[in-house]
Length: 176
Image (tube, rainbow, N blue to C red; front, side):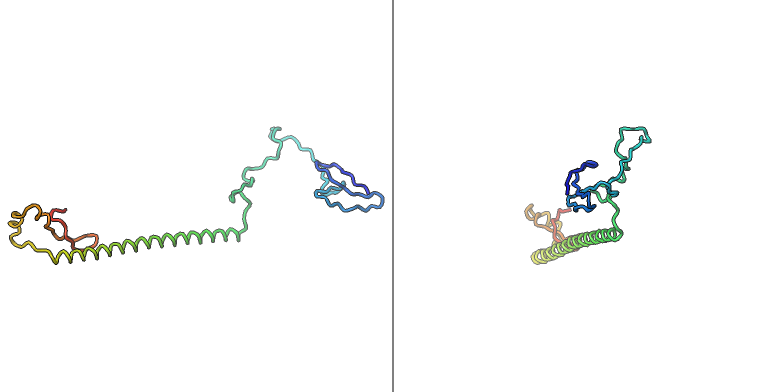
């Protein structure tokens, strides 16, 4: 039995060949090479001149579109089932986002409605309380107003309709 390192190509391989009987000891090392193996012993074909004449371009050129990068657009094409699954997942995500936005919008609208209802109720209560203790200026209001001092004039209120809530409210007599 002889175990000799043999250099072929650019690897050093261990071979195990028995010359007399024609039987060989099995090779257990990786990238093992046996001389005469037609699968691995390919003759080196000499490369000719580049068609373009650019002899510095040593490596075989490939198109940029064939280059594989980490982005899925340039990766090898996926199967139809996988594409459909991804499409369905995207659609489900978009649907969920839409649903969440709608819920948020609905919550905001409900809050606004509740706020308006509370404001309306508060104004109605204020008007009821104020009108119970209010006096109306009758026929001779212009004479009464002339006789009043500044402090009394500040207490005069007039009623007007609030356009936002639709309720009647007391405002200053000089308010716009």
